[in-house]
Every structure is written in structure tokens, then in C-alpha cells.
Length: 339
Ligand code: NAP
Image (cartoon, rainbow, N blue to C red; front, side, top):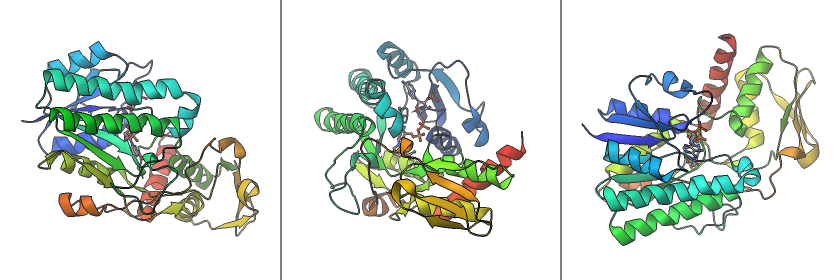
């Protein structure tokens, strides 16, 4: 039985990946850092509570990582743990860097020194492309990161490549474009929208305050993307792969899709910082741009090209952005109805 260790098991991707690996017959270990209130909703949601062995591990603590890796001796490490929210990285650039950069250097060095046969997957990100120099973006597109988050991930991305080339370690990077799901963190824009729409469908009268509606992202479904992570680790050699849908959608369009799930159509007025969205039938204000949510430096548009993953891994995303927004809104309505 192969052993996999997933860091960041309390996040969005950890539980989906854990379920996938359990189904493949792996013994799965998941790491969680110490919190005042532990939340394993994700593992519950995918039906993996009690099946994943939970270990306390903080990426800021070298000896903790060392002891964890040495005691588990995993065949595969999936490093998903990170401070992953771009907005927070502008406010907490140092802790973001320590976790996302140094944490990866710790893991790599422990693998190099003590467990050279252990494979490692690093969660790299489309945010590396930032102010894009070409579109769509693929594995050869130059990087231009635009946030402390992206810059911290640039360091870990290159450390992975450096350890792969220098020490012959199976260090693979997935440059994943945005992927969402029912388990998406509540501060991320897609989930903020779907939660708002769910509340609105149950009669809530609040107005959705949101940042730049014009930015475009390539949104896929997390469950499809963890399959890509698994496939990368089964490949003959370590490499770097882009996972994306190739379809880019504005936040305005995603908002429209989410409202359409509850049968509402939006009418937009104004533009940029003054733009507002009204219920086209009743004229009630539903959405309002609030410059408070603008980023100091924005990534205007991302759109991925996953030809390499299609050809080498036979990986293909299955879920459209329409299906994704429906799944998220329906799940948020169900959650509200269950309290
Ligand atoms: P997420 O929901 O934000 O989960 C991050 C996980 O990392 C959580 O379990 C969090 O624990 C943990 N963590 C944070 N700081 C830590 C630390 N110092 N030590 C140990 N654990 C720590 O992220 P996700 O959406 O699952 O994404 C997984 C990975 O893919 C992340 O590295 C992210 O940057 C990357 N990525 C995500 C996307 C996307 O669209 N989702 C796209 C590209 C790349 P707590 O619960 O205690 O906070």
C-alpha cells in the first residue's frame, strides 16, 4: 500500500485529493496546523473523516516537518499547505513568504537528506503569470508575479526545479489555474458570490459589495484538478504542468451565472468603481463595486493552455464554469437550509 502525505488537509484541495487517493488504495496522512478550533468540514464533506490519519504540522517549524516526514516515510508528498489568499498576502507579506517559500525549502531539504526516494508535488499557481506577457499561458510563458503571494510561490516553484535538477529528486510542480468547489474558502470571490446568492434566494436583502468586476479568471472544478495532481505524480519523470480549462470568465459573468441559478437576471449600470447590478425584473440593487476590495496591484486576466497535460497525462477538465457555479450555489443554499 502506497503512503501519501497531504499538507493542508483542512483547505479546499486537501480533502478532494485525500478522497481520490483513498479510492486508489493509498494510506493517506493529512497535516493540519494547530488551531483553536479544528475544522474538518472538508473531510466530512467528501466522506473521508476517520480514513485520513491526521498529523499536527506547521510549515513554519522545521523540526515538526522533519519528525513528521521521518515517522511517516511517505512515497508521495503533496504540498498543498499555503497562505493562499492573494488579498491577505498584501497585508501579511512576511508570514505568507515564510509559509509559502521557506516551508517548501524545509520539505525539499528534508527529502533530499533523509528520504531521496520520496516524490513531492508542489502547488504552484497561475498567479505566477500575473501581468501576463502572452495569452493563453503555458509552461513556457515567462512569469510576472504581482503580489506577495505570487512572489512567495515563485521562490518555491524555482526551488522545486532546482532540487529536481541538482539532486535528482522527483519534484513536480502543478501550475494550477483557479479552481473552486463547494469547499472553497469563504473569502475567495467565487464563494463570496455564491454564498451571497444563496442568502438572497432565502430572502436576505443585503447588497453584495465586490472588487473589480472586469478581471478575468480561468475557473475549473477542484475535484477535476486533484486528479491532475495524482497523474503528475505517476508520470515517468518529474516535470511542470499547467492545469486549466482554457476558458476565461469575468467576475461580472461569474456573478451573472450564480444569480441565474436562482432565476435572477442582472442589469448593469455605471462602470468600473461606480458599477452596480440590479435585479432586471424588480429593479432592486443587488451588487455594488466597492474600491475597498481593489488590490494594490491587480492581475487583469488569466487563461491557461493545458495542451501538455492533455498530451502527456491525458488529463482533461470535465466541469464547465456554468456547472461549477451551480454546484457552489446549490451547496450554499443547502448549507443555509441545514442550520
Ligand atoms: P486553502 O483552501 O487556502 O488551504 C490552505 C491550507 O494550508 C489550509 O489547510 C491551511 O490551514 C494550510 N496552512 C496555511 N498556513 C499553514 C502553515 N503555516 N502550516 C501548515 N499549514 C498551513 O488552499 P487550496 O485552495 O486548498 O489550495 C491548495 C494549494 O494550491 C495552495 O498552496 C494554493 O496556494 C495552491 N493553489 C490554489 C489554487 C486555487 O485556485 N484553489 C490555484 C493555484 C494554486 P488552516 O486551515 O489552518 O488555515
